[in-house]
Image 1 (cartoon, rainbow, N blue to C red):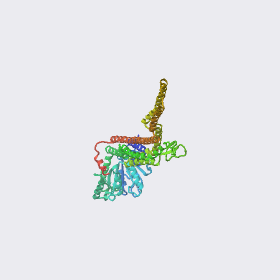
Image 2 (cartoon, one colour):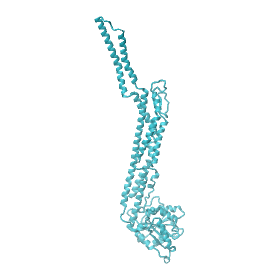
Image 3 (cartoon, rainbow, N blue to C red):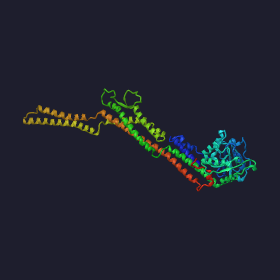
Image 4 (cartoon, rainbow, N blue to C red):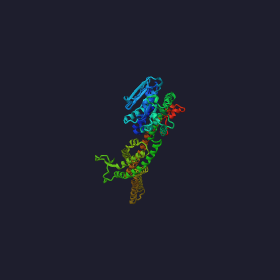
Length: 553
């Protein structure tokens, strides 16, 4: 059954990879998650089986780690001398009932030497004899670091001559907060009290306010050994291997891993910005686009006027034939219809500069750039297409219905009057002719004269002329109508682009919020797991002494 932390870590890795795949994070942003250690001392053993304390001897060359192990074991399980096995490998000393069956697949098994014993009293501890940390072979250091996550207690063995070893101190400072530590000043027969106090002071600088320092003399001849703290070391190891302290150690290690995962997720979330980051960025985009739109309308005025002039009806103008609006980059291999360039490289460059300003502003705010660049990188070309399409549509509509509503109604009215008024004048003149003929025939009066004919013609002419003149004056200019349609199309297209880019912001922000929500759900699971692994109560005094001050490391 997978360990809860392993499942949580895998979920975090899957989340991080999705964020990288969608370009919200870079690979280095989730490196802390990927680097989290999944191994622990418990991972060496199958669940439900006996789990001993894993205690490792750590130190430099010649400090007597193997001699100390032999004395603790009560038998020569580790060979001593210049050329000993642990100069190149890790030696394990454990009870024959303890089974190690969960080493990682890529673990260097050829660098592990296992020795077993039958002492039931020592069953609670598995000893690990590490390679010398100050060896000239870099592989030794790598082997030590490989085993570090699977150690409960590190027994840092020094000698009176080697307790200020630089390499050992560097590793202690790097990994001090990850383990419980016991410090053994071995070869005490050559040591002095002042060296013990100096060593205690050095440990204080590493964060150990009251470290457990034990003096040992592990010479072969028992009678020659100086009084030391070996019995206390044995007692402490038995106390540490007891269930209470072991449980505290495991709980602390588990909580440290969970806290590390939570911090790694939080660090990755910082790259995604705060909750209102994209709304603030959209406000900045509105300012950028407003300035760009103003420049575009000013810069496109001449192309729009030039295009509109083609519809003025002036055949001397070479553009005065059917037109097709186009951009500067389109091929012109058709002689007709003529093409009018409305959207050119300058206009596209203005939009590209606006998108570039947006990308720069995104980076300046510390937000992921790639999603914005991917979301809006197509818009310089897309804006040109929309401007041409909208301008073509509005141009056709403007030419189909030129002028405004008042002009169209007035033109219809004047057109009707141009027919009705002359008809009324002709009807009136005809009536007068018929009436005058009748009156002259019945009353022997003079028939209508020249004055009547002139006046009638003038009346009929005026009845036609006045509405005709009004129609001529009210008829919209084709050029002005075309220019109005083009302007409306360009303005409408730029407004639509602004709305579509705002919709793109919303889509990008929803994607970002989804990524954030997943991470926050993982953090809630981590918090719940952290609470589950907490043992509660005060840590034993011994464990407090074995752990460094967290503020120092």
